[in-house]
Image 1 (cartoon, rainbow, N blue to C red):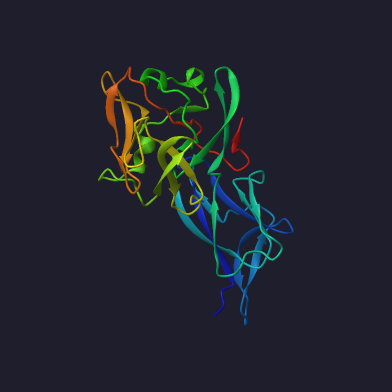
Image 2: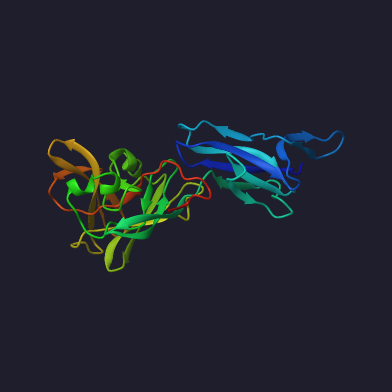
Length: 285
């Protein structure tokens, strides 16, 4: 029997924020379901004048991957939460029957403004795994002490839209053996912009085009890359916490975290403060 429907692989990117997926047909009606035709192959698309969600998850929790059967062969538009959050519209021929289509409930890359030395600049950000933080695509220009790194709000080095990551925000990056978590990330050694480091690439559906480059310290070379950046936690009184990594051209190892004198200076890779970014909001001013 030939397939008559397509499947949306819905990636709920956050543990926060609304998630209701609506489908509209070309005549502006909402899709409420599919009804098998009598005495012949195929189905009819059941339509509604009022909103009908084909997929719903509560705002708190539930980041993950879900599957929804949707009409094939008809033009549909996809919305998240309300009619203003338009995700995409198919071509007139619609989706191809029998195929899977990945759909993220919000953007996984974008830009946000940062206030740097009194000037407003645009900084790229990227989410690397489902439910993960949104990392800046670059470090703060200068190394800083832990006291400087943990400032919040307008006092933060890039302003209130950013903050220094916590242990909880980065712990998914490594597994129990202090190796890179290869279920969600892969690493490639690179020498980039006069720096030795690793390009990390997402592996989950919706993230395979997302990358960040983490740089080693000034003593790194191709055979041995060693780097660290501050985290916001004070796990030991009087000491700051760092996220540490090392490796060579073939393997990346992660120390998880360690304590450092809080007056030491290290790199900072900020993350966005906002918990949820909806479609149309990926360029945060």
